[in-house]
Length: 428
Ligand code: MG
Picture 1: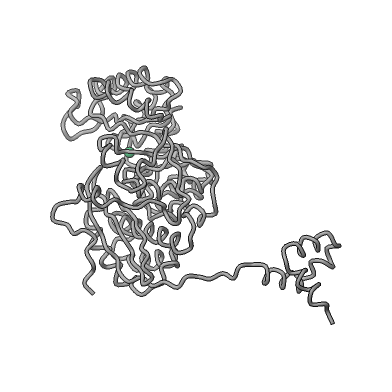
Picture 2: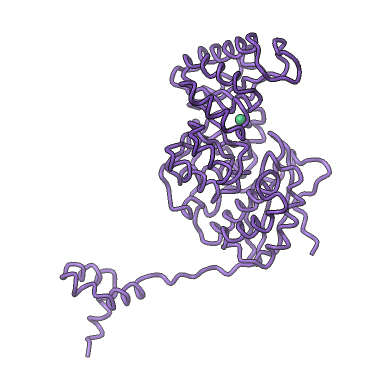
């Protein structure tokens, strides 16, 4: 018969360490290891939760955003944010509610897949449907983190980096003039190491006409002058990206990309619409300027052909509409198989940006993430109770459970879209 005291010692951590010094076959024979693990581990208790309600609030800051909250029978809720194709998403979320109430919110991926596949004949391939699904899925991850007591990045396998490099979208009407004189020094003072300007100008008098976006020589000269001016007025080590918003044709895209080669851009964004894959491939292979796109593509299938055809240097999924955080990670992994890095599009509040940040630290192929609220600094700084989340050009994911930030409703409600509800309980 075994000595009980000796047996108990074996099952303590010290006992296990002592055993490790013994020959492997004796110390770690399977039965003794199983007993040791069983006795020295904290029993895992999976929280039992049920979804009881889903509520929305619609705001307009940089475009429309839908904030989504998922409530449970245990008093905790998760919050998410959807953007861009957010108009009408509150009606879709009400439909999703019928499927989700009573479900276990910790089955995040399974719930997402159920909603996606049930909507195949209702537009689930992109647009508003996928945008609504994105905000909802982000809320599920926030809820899962809160329920399990872990930050979302930990649920994604931990961190490749501690902080997320952020670039400032300057959101300027014209990069030459008073607005630029004010903003360029401010961007530098904030500590950003990268920024972006827009090159498309609907009011350019050199345009051929109001409809055709084939650029004239005068327009291309104006674009080059803008880039030259900004390049000369920001630090040499600050990266500069330029956006054409998918408005132009392939010939214009090629000409602009080649003209801008001397400025060594971080990227030239969407010279043509992202869905025009062959044109994007043509432009990319005609220039040394890196080509970026992806903010208007949805889910992993939206990126496959673009990657297969080597049509892009940098991919820009928007996590608040691409399908959510798990789908963002799937797109990142797909891109990595082609050695393509990610620079996520991001135009949302600190809640959405913190959600993006949790993904950005958890993927290997991350370059820089967008910030687009330069024209709304007061709302940005006070939108969440935690205050400013960008410090010296970087955002650090919170170590608190879930996303780690909570909305200050007295602030966010200033941006509420008139005539819409504010997290109103759903009629059961
Ligand atoms: Mg863009």
